[in-house]
Amino acid sequence: IYTVTITNGRCTTEDTITLDVKPKPELEVNGDTVLCEFSDGTLIAESPTAIDFIWNTGEQTQGITFNADSTLPAVLTVTVTNQYGCESNNDQQPVSTTIYPAPNADFDTLFSSIFRDEVQFIDSSSNDVIDRLWQFGDGWEVEDVVSPKHIYTETGNYTVYLDVVNQFNCVDVAMMDIFIDEVLEIPNVFTPNGDGYNDEFVISSVGMKDFELTIKNRWGELVFNSISSRFAWDGTSQSGVDVPQGTYYYQLKAAGSQDYSHMGTVTLLRD
Image (tube, rainbow, N blue to C red; front, side, top):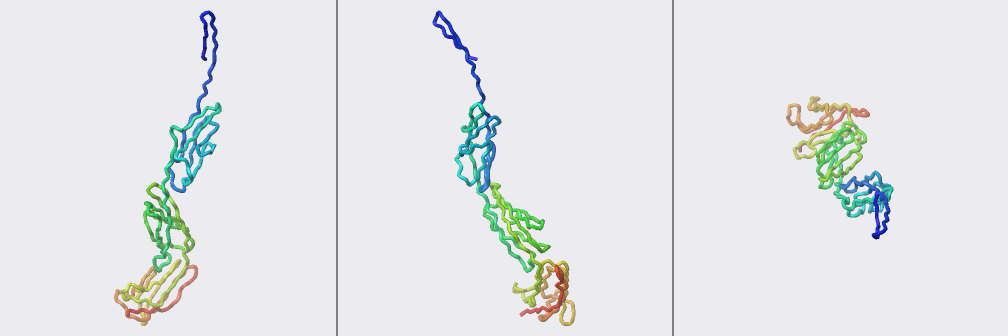
């Protein structure tokens, strides 16, 4: 309450006035100020008594959502008004955003051997990637490997994911669907002459539940045997001696979704 007194030396008069001082609304701006490229951010004007909000982006909501790639003012400010018409703003402490570049995740596949259940994944992501997580779609995953190999023990469709992270902790994800089909292919000739090409007799197979291969010479003598579908016969006997070139007879017992068992011949050439 304020009182004013006026006098002319002989007469005196006075009056009083009551000032009702209303509080300005409290204001604190919180949210995302550091963003990765292509990501979304949110800012919230925390003001429990404000009823109106005006941002310098033109929006009139308590919170604003924006994309890192959108055109934003250099700084972000907001003015809030309470029920008494009192205003507060963050002009003295405006919010600025920092946008970091995102990595690019990408990869391709290559069946890395004659065994088509073994897949080589070729990472072709951007050079700024510092960490990787591969998820092969069958419950297995591996970290910190650039281009891993993976063996699928079952046929079927698999979705493979590659998650990458750069030095700014920005992420990207690439995915690919691959199909592992049941197959069994048997060559009829191989040339174990040490030239690095077709030096081993290998049956390309995927999805075999049961497998046993027996190879004999023309006199019926056993020269090779394997119960693993991932075998490779290099043209040597069980004692490790090179067998002569010629025709050899095999008996295959193999089963996947169907029975692949049969008998056949393979020709060994050394010249």
